[in-house]
Image (spheres, rainbow over the protein chains, first blue to last red):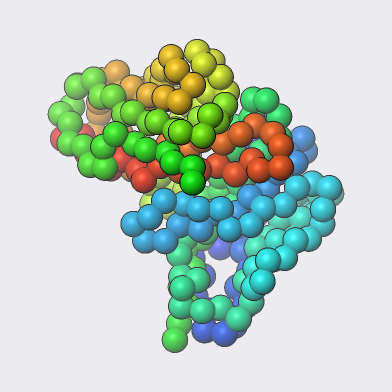
Length: 113
Length: 114
């Protein structure tokens, strides 16, 4: 079955700097890679996703890149702000009628003022 | 707005009790999931269901079962609760295909087994 590994487990960056979180997956059939943000005490919410027919996707300060050959995908946050502090989860799944969504172990991102 | 609602925010149960966690979604999603969240371990899939009465084991199904008698409701059952099942449980739902396959989560149930 699918296995998703996520690194680092914790990340502290200066406000205004960039943050990068990396994930690898094992199942070459996976074709959908979402990223979720979980603020303290709240439920995870989707912030960006990418499908396997695209190598990069951006949404304002957030971008995700995908390397299907290497089975790597990464989240990039630029110009970090205090409200970016949260736990981030990557995930992998197959868009089909019956597909699990397998999550990574999470990255706790802290933004230093 | 999609709403995924879990029946309890906090539960305290005794070892050996049978525990039911309920989840209801209002967006006609085919897929529903149960995860447990533990520090440092992320979101681990317990079971998922892709249709009424259909279920598949996730990565950690031992000690759990599920029931999906209606499309909107997915129940997680702890047959005989144990202290190592103390955790945060999250339910989610999604569409299996299409332009929006985002998974929507419930607010979570923090279960303590004493």
